[in-house]
Image (tube, rainbow, N blue to C red; front, side):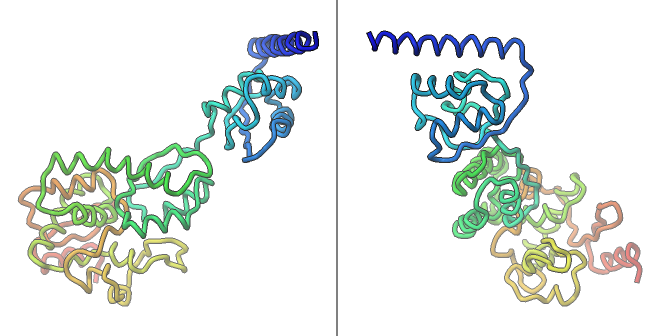
Length: 321
């Protein structure tokens, strides 16, 4: 008799939840609410929080349905996007399935170094920036972290974040190597592409800038690329940023294997994470483009020249004495 009454009570509770949910669905205007469920929270604590935020109408119904359909252990910890005035059963199913997981839209710009990416990840609550950088440095992944817009859940493991970015690299960049064969190695292409990425302001100049650096590299001439010095200098305290502006002659003498004013050949690796177009520019530089120098003019475009005298003349014309 008691068992029958218990079953009837559970059925009545379930029926009540369905009716309440239907009323809420048809007659209430939903309002977004972001809820965080911490690991180890009890069903009662979750119900109380949901009730307080106006997501559910009844803690009792929520707890009863939770016992009937699962347990508090089945509720995933994390941050979820829910709606106010949602049926208790729908909330339970949504959290259990992970369908309502909250994702942050994070955009990494082309040409960012890994430290800038780490700072963005930390500021958005995505992952541990120190561990992220430790993985990148240990596995030499600078240049392989594909710059794009991602949807990350909060408190992801650094390994998961890195893996997602590497997956996008393989998806977007590896096909370029298959489409445009080259005698350069993959690290060499990425290193040159990272310099092109930091130099190029106007999109259509990328293949020309790439051609200049390839020409210099092929004849054994130092690249003398300002971005490599900026990378070597690291964080500019006075400017409170990476990529110091207005390099001085003292900066150009900074002793680092990344300083292509002091050392010939390519730097030890990429200086940033280049985008699709910069990698493509290195694999498909402007054909028969024999310039060895360029200087920036107003508006971000560059003037290219074949000889050093011509280069000096262009500098004087653009910048004055």
